[in-house]
Image (cartoon, rainbow, N blue to C red; front, side, top):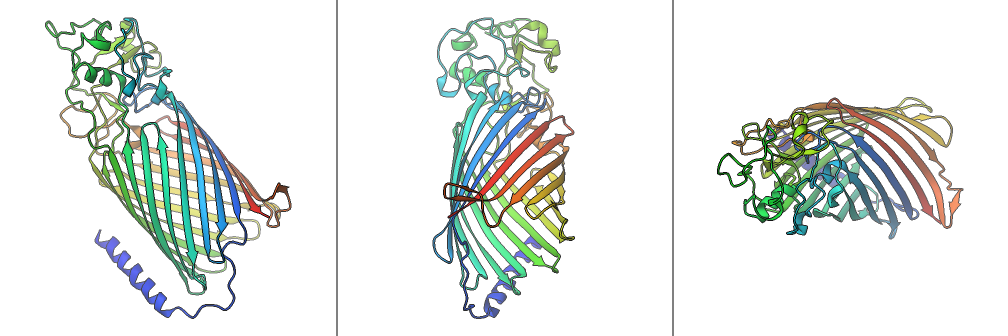
Length: 480
């Protein structure tokens, strides 16, 4: 922390000094943005894995996501630009669908008193047709930026809103960028605040349990056999043997999750061929930082199931298609988190054909995660308009202090999770792209002149078994 504050103090003093030394405005002033620009961006993502967090660290992770976005930048005058971007993410998730693996009885506010068939089944390896199997996340962001007459000072302010079926977010922020040394050196300072609210959805069996105040002979449980680890139906009154009783469980009362970030950046052109930059952030999160949809199973608590007793011995195998283990609790994490990412980039112009772009980031937080990210991209200009983009990215991280795999958390712990995003893992990502650029925008659609096209493909693999493919496209137009 002391080192960070020293760097911050240096940035502030250095920036103040350069403000004082700034020369008078230039007599000629070029518009910041000559004409309105419109970007159409889209991506398609698909993944498969075997560590679904909604089902406690095992289970089907198949997911697809389609994300179209429109970004419109409008020059308001010579100095000011308004940028608005809006988009949505339409996803379908096998993991999220198993919030209700039984396909019966409703979710969240849809809990009802119908009689549940005694032969219901479910499995972490089979996607449910429940309401949570798919959803649409939508967002809109507006940013206003102003540049000084000599273009050496830029400030901006932004506001955003996002929402999906169990979550909503309001964000706002701003920043200040200073260029000096003939615009060869850049200092930046920005801040973001996100005020988020959960509309929590819980595993269906915990909803049922709460609805009947723990009476397993009432409501939606009344007609459903509950099985022990040997496959025997238990006496749900508890007169002759223990019963399923998630004693740690209670719904969340603090439905907020707020994030505050402060970001610093420094960029320097080293020569006509080389450019270097540094950045670091301080991020503070407070509120409910767990996901109420995600189940946890304890190693020191007996297991109980609904479904086919014969499948219990193979529960953790993908061959299990018809039995589901009742949750012991939902994920629980500390109510605060402090994050410190710091990184650098180095870009080098080799010749008219090749440019080298490199990136490195180190991350640490007070949950015990430490990570390293490194990437390299080598744009290859094959003609005046076409460029190829081969790239590679490597990532590794340590596990959070509160992570444990399926059936390895303890009920006596204060915090626990089986979300493999918090586990120890490493990942490799290989990508390739092609870009088309026409600075004169000769090709038109209505009043839009096509300025550039970018198409990219990335293949991502974790050593935990998660695999993903991402296809993205971007089209930039200028307004006539």
